[in-house]
Length: 278
Image (cartoon, rainbow, N blue to C red; front, top):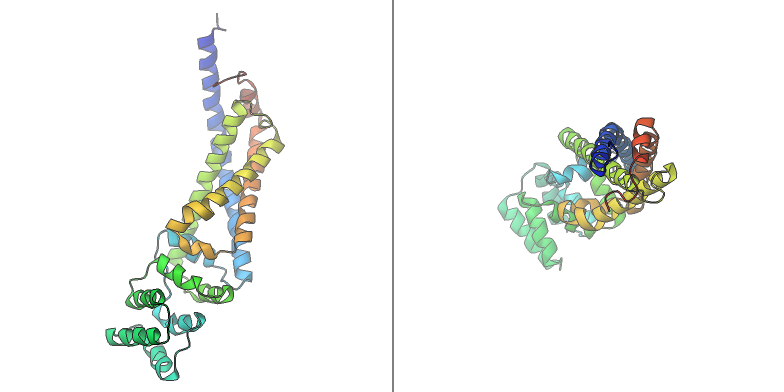
């Protein structure tokens, strides 16, 4: 009497909930460890490339929340790194005033007229005006930096002031996102194993799926999420960024593979009926 279809499916649903609860902790741990490995790689890579060791958190992740703009004191250097060479008669006063932290409307107008006369593109002149007036956005800064050489962009990022608040917020955002991905990977892999997707009940299959998941997350970030929400991330070394996503998937996959081998999880996953959910 206990083998009726209704009772069996209720039991299996109960087993699925137990599996979900048993995987919650390991999934969080997997995401956090994967996030740690990923951010360490990006800190080391960007630091070694001259972009500043704090940049991945101070600028990269923090730009989801903060408007990251170069301080006014960096303006003379920023102009030079963009390949704009002001005459000495203008460069000297600009440097003096910029270090004071304030440009008068008259000087901003004079500088804009000078840049126009030097045949600087109108869009660039407009963006420089926004930067000088304190109205620039992350998109404005990203557009200005896109006209620079890679080495010049690295110098700008390295020269950006490190803000403790931005680093803290960047750290929280990074690990929150990593934890969310850990839970998402566990849910998808667990569902695939429960539904008897070929290979998804083996350690190799779980790890491979997580690595592929890391690559998919990179593609979504690179061409979907980041361009409209955080354009400054376009200047992150993309090969390292991609490999860091694969490393994230590898770490998550290893932790989940161990979790799936625990008797309390493996036994219940193995009890899922053939064709369940179809």
